[in-house]
Image (cartoon, rainbow, N blue to C red; front, side, top):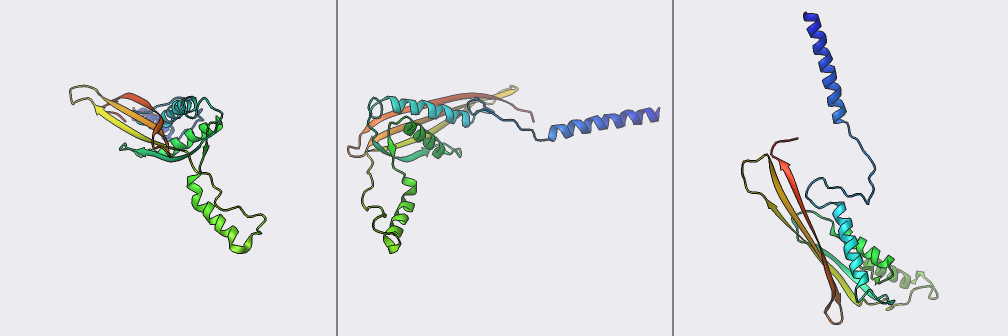
Length: 205
């Protein structure tokens, strides 16, 4: 009887060990960038894709960029993050700018590389580059418009009551503006809103 109990106990321990081992292993899978996945109510890459798609479509379809063959020069000064989360708003602006350029609706000043451009110009005029091949000074193109934005969020939770799950509501809003530099007027603006609800158990893994 004791031997049989020991055998059963050993077998159970082995099975339990295998289950724990298989549960602790890391698994991976490839996910399509177009697939919508939300693990919780927080901002994620699916939200970024939706925001970029909606705003890029709006700015390229409406004046002053839409409806014309001209490609005005734009400079982007980023998206201000007014949320309490660490969100890479620079990635949002980069993707929107990429779509605008791909649509042939505008040209962008590369403001991030200005120091490198100045460094290269100093080198070319430092005596090491022949006058025939060095770039002419004071030929850079001035921007006509400035592209800026603001990302905001609001979070609401259900009040404490007797329940198995607590619901959390997360709201995100990103507003983008295109401002004429000469006039100071907002020539185009649009916003995208994302609202998501999550139900979290009070007890769980």
